[in-house]
Length: 398
Ligand code: TYD
Ligand code: MG
Image (tube, rainbow, N blue to C red; front, side, top):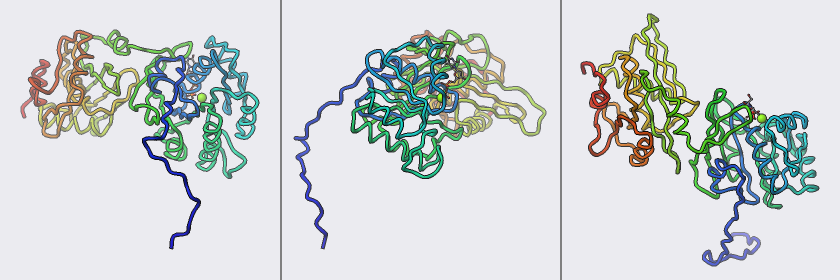
């Protein structure tokens, strides 16, 4: 026997009203691109990233934009109110609708909200707040989960948008691995490194829009600047005529952008040559080195190999293989390539596989009149050996 529970009113699905969630543009185009048009009322957005990447800066700029039209409460549990004010002054931000409270107690922040009822509540950061309802210290799994739960409940009940800042460790997880990501509506990560380098805002989850959107910024003296055309910036800085550099058209979501892959190969007497990889999957680059040795006759056992994606961009797309391979061989042979764009996944037998979005990559590359495009597909190259010849490089004995 199944015990009778409370009886529920069910609805015919097609008769359920689909009140479209209205979006409010944030005023920062690159953020709106990632959110899918703007904030949805009552939603909770997690903004993750490594310490120092610029999360507090981005959210302060966002806060000032939103506060132009509405009201924002910034709850800072990491910095004092005067530190936040100092940063706002540095950024030239002055919005009367922006209030700040420097407190890490969840209940205190929520009662401040009841008084002010902001359109946007920012919690910086979820790892430094604590709720009286849970045990454990700030930043621990239990506190993070329970505190986030309180803010989520508040957002759903009042329609306030809540943005939670979450620090990511070098290993890439926010305290309480994944728990937080499951709880919130939108997850965005801010990535990038180096002063003046690019900052990429990526969405990993979006209950109200598509994921894999990228927003691009640079960190300058007065905060984050939007970069609507990152390819232009990269190509401008690209030093044609140097060996070891190749352009790669990355495609993510609706965005395509050119990235510059650089390689430096130098002879070494060390028994264990160095392999340093930045912005790419290290294991994949190691595999590529083996394929180059075996199928293109490129000797690398007595060489240090450094591979880098310019501007702190991180690429996970396997289509970057061919650009990496060409950059490495160009450096080994110290032969500069003409302005070259390349893409294609390199297989273990030295074959080049067709990559997704071939046409969009071609289009993105074409905007900059490359002198050479090395790509797989119809009429394109099929092996690493062919690719090297196409680029004017010399394959060794296979
Ligand atoms: P911050 O937003 O504090 O990072 P997070 O909150 O992710 O830890 O930004 C930290 C870095 O950004 C800091 O090293 C200084 C730099 N920065 C600038 O280069 N320009 C600026 O205008 C600001 C405000 C910060
Ligand atoms: Mg911060």
